[in-house]
Image 1 (tube, rainbow, N blue to C red):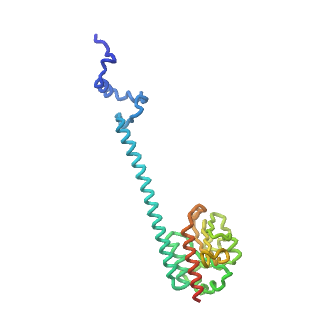
Image 2 (image 1 turned 45 degrees about the vertical axis):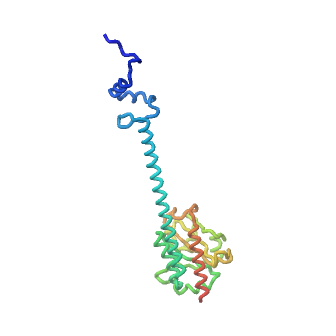
Amino acid sequence: MNASPTLADLSPELIRRWLQDHPEFFDHNPDLLPAAITASGKVLSLEAGQLNTLRQKNEQLSTKLDGMLERVRRNERIHAAFHQIEVHLVTAPDPLELLRVATRDPERLFGIHRATVALSTRHPALLTLFASVASDPEVEDRLFPIDHKRLTETLRDAPHPVIRVGQEGNNRALFFGAAAPHIRSEALVPLYAHPDSGPNGLIGSFNLGGETPNRFLPSDATDLLRDLADILGLCLSRLQGTT
């Protein structure tokens, strides 16, 4: 009878053949493979395991990079759209075209449910200037005179946009007219005769209303909205000065 092989008799080749004949060995003894991985029933080398890990990390980085690039492209489209509106505002030849650009363009370019302009009753010259075009189909129900005190109470005498969500906007009809029942969130941006004129130069507000509660949120960046409102305020003052 042949004696059982001793440890001294176990060559690497003999061990290899035995493992090939008993692939389930590592399934029952996974602690013997701290640096290898198992896939499709085959034991992979440490180098193959590291390569697989690197590939997974590369895929994750690629996905993150694609997301970053898409955000960059989206921001570029937003900036381009704002720039387009600002150019159209500056070149608007009359009150009707100014209101049309200020209200219809944001609705069309950004999918906003309703954009409007409110003018303070403290500036009757402005109200008179726009009274003749307020009922035009191009801007109908998008221009509203608002008592100056009510306006300042809502805007809180702040240069920053006021973001209201849900039931916060209990006076939405003042800013959105017949569209108010459909508004679930809004951004009310103060309009000034000049960006540096302060509260005393308040002439109205530029109002954007969304149909969903998360269309405008307090955490949203508002720099572009403020820039747009600054240009609109200057254009309103310019038109008033030409009458």
